Image 1 (cartoon, rainbow, N blue to C red):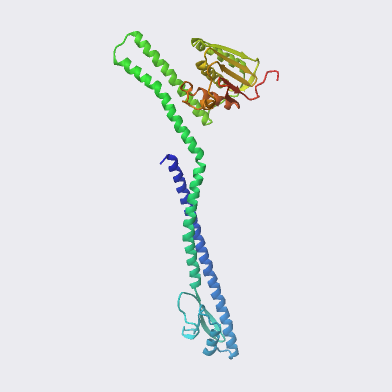
Image 2 (cartoon, rainbow, N blue to C red):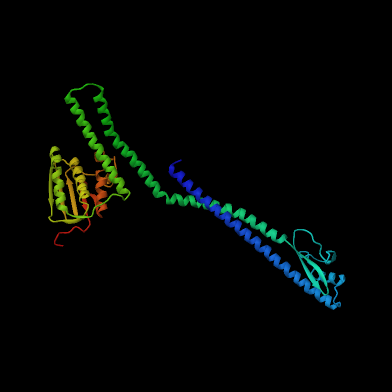
Length: 387
């Protein structure tokens, strides 16, 4: 199981757990409130029954000269006869005076002293709770059915949502994993060379020329290692949005000319003629060091693939770096900007990806035109001093 799958499962589990707590708490509170409301309704009904019974008995007593007889009380109770509402009248000393339906089963009762005529009695009124208990039982069954079902549906939906929302993260994880693997591979070569030269140098005594040769190899590997680490650091900070991009005014044509002069020696060592053409007074805002690095990366790439000539042209909002090499096949013209692209070992590394990132960081673009022409388009903030 991958880390991302475990993350999806954990997110779904936490989501389901929180929802389970919320639904259970809500269900219990709702159940308690409904039960309380039913009980309060029962109490009000019992109180109303006592008042109705007392009024009816008072009428009977008035008709009988102010005294309530057992016969009259029994007859009046029979008027209220209801198996769900048993009633009885007790004397003041709690002796049975009259009753109708016997008290039995699951009842809620109310006992209250009443005065009928010139005597005091105790009225006992009951209310069956069977209907309420049946309603509450159905409610519990519904909760036991709906809450797990809701949780099951929510868990499935939550997993699908987590899978959908984490899809970009999955791509990012895969890209990061691939990038780390490729970076490790790229770093392994100079480190291995350094380790090998150190082991050989320390294994036996050697003359000065051999030591110088080993040191030269180690210096070259160290420079390569430093360049790779520097490039990785730049891309990592750029991806995190933490690379500070200076906002300064400078002349793009001067930066291009200076960068070309820097690479003339490298080009000459390879037998490559490096020419440069530019318009004058191209003023722009941006990070001069990054723009110089972008141009340098493109020139270095062109020198490595040229047969005899590299031409750099700089005009308003456009820079072209052209070489007379074989060019990039159409199917690879986007992939060469991937980090550590290995479709063509000679183009692997971070130079082109960094160049594109710098162009985009300045609001521009970098693409391959015709296979051997790299075109940088910069925003229209580039302007001459007269504008």
